[in-house]
Length: 322
Image (cartoon, rainbow, N blue to C red; front, side, top):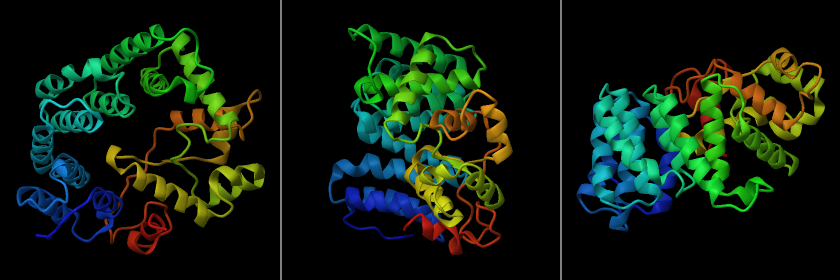
């Protein structure tokens, strides 16, 4: 078992970025739990965070029994707290219970979180993701709608930007994605989500949902040849592009991200005659409707997810640390 000593929050962040690429990630998960047990954290209040990380590592390797045990302990470590980390621990616990076939227990864990959707930026994503794993998309849509309406009721007018919207933006964003998965017709709240995303894109930020759109090498060459301006969004070379995607995957590792593979023809068809394929909103919409996901991360000695044919440890793994 790996011995981890005097772990700080910065250490945990570094482990989160690198553990899945190590030779024995499950040993790291066990080492984190053992560090909690033996008081080897720089701050005892980091116990919950360390156990969340252990659970996520175990889940990434499909060791659900171990993941549930770590998540149980993380929830216990946070006690009755309702801060962002505590919500994350409970939502993770529920997600793992769903994946383990324990749906009633998962819903019992999530129900008390319903009023907290409008309290922390991370809450909408984690709670909605847990419900989606359990096939409760309709429940997620209902809860998010309730939270959006409550947030709007507290305002005197429509937000002028995503920054102005604050937590409301995250609620709208998650609700928009859930409704898209349910194939529901756009309503006023969906239209507001679109307007805020457009304002975010016009401010020079890549539209939400576009970060994990991956172009295989041949498609990358076609996209850049056809829309040269997209080098700013995807990189000037394929190496730069897949490095960007790998780093974003590492950053989002806690939420079990998966890149989606796009094609130049697919983007062009989605855009049609009325939309610009180079527009950030168009690209975000194209990304959301893609269903074929790439499994990430691969085993350290397995073939890299980017399709290069090289081992992951020799290809995109080091790019994520650059």
